[in-house]
Amino acid sequence: MAFEALDNGFRSCPDAGALAAICASLGHHQVQAFFDRWMAVLPSPFTQAERGRYGYGLSVRQLEISDTRVFDRPAAGRAWFERTIADQLDLGRPDKVQIVFDRKITSKTPGVFQTKVITKGVAPVIQAHYKHSKVKQYFKEGRALRTETTVNDPYDFGVGRLLSRENWSALLAVGEQTNQRLLDAQLQACQCAPDPTALARIVLPSTHDGLPAPGLRFGDPRVMALLACQCHYGHLFNGLTNRSLRELIAGLIPGYSARQATYDLCGACAAKASSNVSPTASATS
Image 1 (cartoon, rainbow, N blue to C red):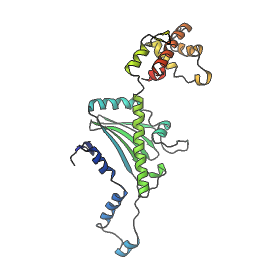
Image 2 (cartoon, one colour):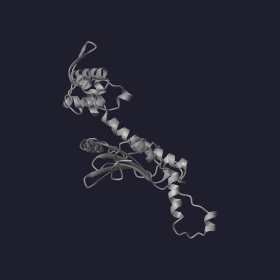
Image 3 (spheres, helix red, strand yellow):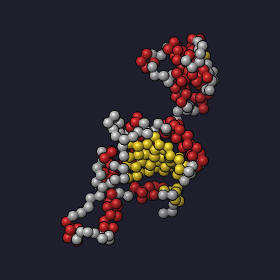
Image 4 (cartoon, helix red, strand yellow):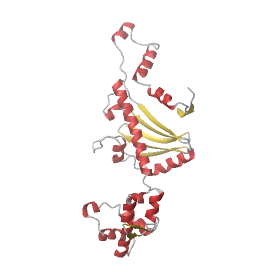
């Protein structure tokens, strides 16, 4: 089958489905056969009779499961990844590790929770750890986004170490799902910006339900202060009023008045209702 290599991966192939099937065919049977073939050739301290009485049980101590996404425009992909690293600096925090690895984290969970950003030459690598295992991501050969989960101890995920069909399948599922959860989290972070039509309805003055609504011009200090203060979650307990929000904004813009708050909140509420995009999400974008 013809293919174009990408270091130890694949850059392109005319029949991607067939290539994927070949890669997926690797299982515990092939690993066991490889071991048995070499054990029949290499010298052994056991006699032939002893070999018939005793056998070897293989254990899995490290398994790497990778996901490679090749970009049609490598420069755009590299720029996207470098921006994403800045957004993922908290990847190694316990709350994020809990989501990416789908494991419950408690105060008794061993390991160091931290985000590592390593630069090899001009190629940055970001990685986070869970117990003995880790997930890392880097831009491979200047063209492809490589996401790689390395399981260094199956016990980290409640999977046995013995090489068997069940343990092999369970570890593959752990790696594939961890890679996908990290990619999903990154892509969702990129989707917070409204589409051009919704953005225009937010930033320009408009009429909603017969009432005029002012525009929210992003970049304006007063608008940005309003959106930043709406990220304060105290209103979940105390309620949200003109006065409570005005006190927060006044800490950022001295002299902020009740009249200004009323004007700004009319724009924020109308924009939220007309575009179905919350002001908080818009501020994040």
